[in-house]
Image (cartoon, rainbow, N blue to C red):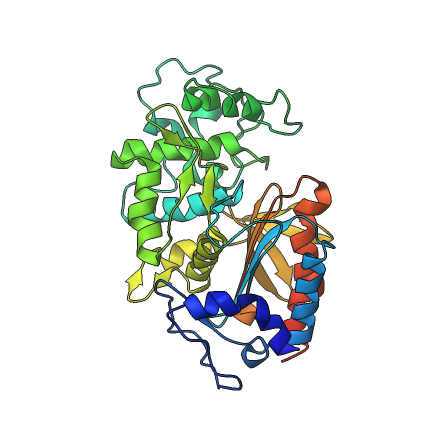
Length: 369
């Protein structure tokens, strides 16, 4: 069965400069492994994963039982044990990340904090002195900190559900100043009091990066995050001012590069001999700051600084989630990263990766241990 599972990857493995582990070869624990241009690969069974269960999942995706999946990458102990693309997608396709972008933004903000560019306790509006006539100004708006913005507790009423006609809908279709659109919205709570999903405030963090570093946030991400870990071609949806990248949902990545992001988090911010993001930021940004603001499938989910925290026994699954079925799962208990890209246009297409993570992938690890 293991041989059958590997068949879709033969062409990719032949082109890969890193040879796959030999069948039955004893694999290392991956703690000191970081991929170069390519990843090392191994059979699922050799990495401690039930190959039959994993192959059954792949068959279901191929037969469109999970109809809208475009890409699936699973990394275990630093070995790629599954990589496959569906529904016309390919390894080279830079896929829309939607709100997975927010979790990447968290890493970018953490790097800037590590560099001493600003502190998480700094006030959001202090970064925008050029906006002297912000609408709906009050003491609550003046009190917004970067911490409250990162934890979705800013208090700005930048709602996006229902989407049609919402502030986010207006911003996404506007050629005007995105920062002003966000900052002008009224408050409906004091900072730190009410959790409400808010892409607009996350977009404003791109302005924080620009005004504190004098580098566009996408260039800052390229120099300080993507290049150090080997992320390839990226694309950002941009607007005004200053070609501001859409930090709330406008990043495009390849599935394997999304897996690199996950592997960086799994390795607590280290890549080779470089601490790309501090271990302290990884820990604080993936902590349980807000309890159970949402449920994914039947799983109660907490929130950190732009990361979701899902349960696995008495441990956490560090999660990035985007509309239309974009998911990144970092599973420290099993030293595993799962990256999923999708073209989901239905609710099932959005939530399917959570369902098969819990029903197919995690049991494949647990039953083989």
